[in-house]
Image (tube, rainbow, N blue to C red; front, side, top):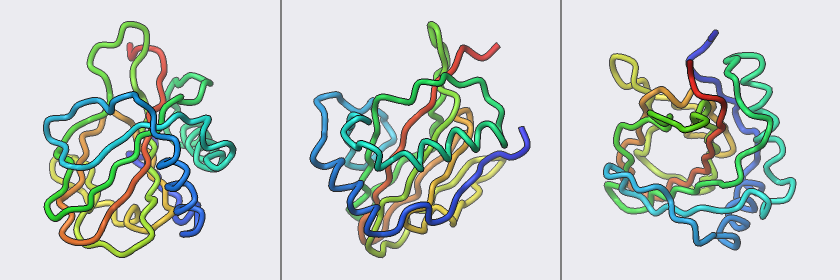
Length: 178
């Protein structure tokens, strides 16, 4: 692996972010978000197909980044579900966690992709990847920016102090780690 994370700044503009968010609000499924004891945020799940081609650049960028930067063995099938997290109240946060599964039957979560859908200013809510200490990734604070990283890395969202932070995330699976 050449890098620990990769970002593409402003892949989408604010109007496109708002459109993606509105589509998400219109396509919430009955599927529950996986419970997380250290998550203090509103969260819901959407079906990827509800977005049509609006997320093509996101998915193409994740696949390209994996091929050129990470080289993880991921399946060709795109994820079927999209998660939306809203951190809107003071002190909303997502404590330190990792997305990778510990023991998969046939597959493991290999790669995480996050898109900042926020269109209005907010304070706090910094995204950090933990490597001996928290490393803030300030690029993800920019609306329309995507961040891609191996799902084995622990990460967190610090408390939002004011405003609303909105992110889209999904996970890319591959055969079990060997």
